[in-house]
Image (tube, rainbow, N blue to C red; front, top):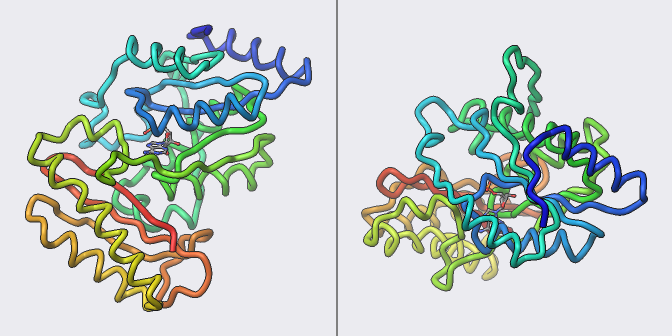
Length: 279
Ligand code: AMP
């Protein structure tokens, strides 16, 4: 396994892969790796000649009052996990090289960012889209792997890839969960033991709404209300939103006809968690 820190070296590797006609599978991450990330890394390795995983806590996607400084980091542990998943290259760029003085170009994906996380975290998707485009230009992947856990992010990236003719296939992989249903997240490390014990109610609420959908309920308001009710029973969990949207456009739905996603965000103490389920 190779660890590459400079953009120049990473691009040299990527150019070599492209000119040899070999495929690269890419997994962008912010590190503190868990089984969710590793499922993407294994898929990238299985589908391509080489896999590249990046670790970069991207300052541009955190708001001024968010957890950039506190975001968990464990480079030694992450490298070990990558080694075990047979990752070929770990790309660990430096923030000053990614955002040098005078940096002033950003990617704004309109429409699909006007709902859910886009409203609650102003500037977040601008930071995400900008860094993902930069990483695509550096890693030049044939395929890039993202988790369904961050559903709106997958829609934003797909939209950008189409709109800007990016030469990479965007692959979305299912959410990996703890045995009790909690979606794996680097931010789960913030939870105190009682908070951790309360957290599975988020997934429980999604499953309960899905059960209602499976039994024939199609009213989006009723489904979202059900999720809210379930979470309301857990006093430690403060729901931010529960919304049923079109799975492709993220337009809010009144009635579930075709593919839809129920997405939620909740706070447990100081930790903000998101999750979703496809209907
Ligand atoms: P992050 O390090 O949180 O930016 O996540 C990097 C990638 O891993 C993103 O595409 C996430 O959607 C994905 N990911 C995070 N958690 C999970 C999970 N529990 N299951 C599947 N993918 C995940």
